[in-house]
Amino acid sequence: MIVHEGSLVATGLRFGLVVSRFNALVTEQLLQGAVDALRRHGADEKDLEVYRCAGTFELPALLRRVAASGRHDAVVALGCVIRGGTPHFEYVAGEATKGVAQVAMEAGCAVAMGVLTTDTMEQALERAGLKAGNKGAEAALAAVEQANVFRALPGGKRK
Image 1 (cartoon, rainbow, N blue to C red):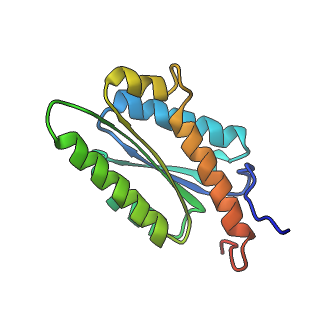
Image 2 (spheres, rainbow, N blue to C red):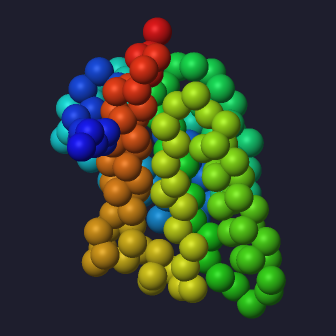
């Protein structure tokens, strides 16, 4: 049996981190977790680029352009949508999720999603490092693994 899987070694990989400014109390913690995870797994500071957009709805459009630039082995979407009293949550969360998924299917690099969709700010903060780990770090490690398995495929080396 032949098994193809990616390692969690980030050495030599380049990353684009696309971060929403809306709910910055949460998204900055997600970014910090992602950067810390990438460094701990061997990524060099010079191989990390951060791109900021206004909100989570805007993430997929910027993510697509960053992925299409060819500068990165992996891109990571980091955002946070917190449920409110109107249907706005469903629209933003749904479109952001669909948008990131579409980028992942079309991109020539690995794409990971670290977008939180929570009912409360407390839940969001818990998932951004207070109690339930840091979902930004988890997304970054998923990007490392995916980038490495992509590289292992024929023609998978970045030029």
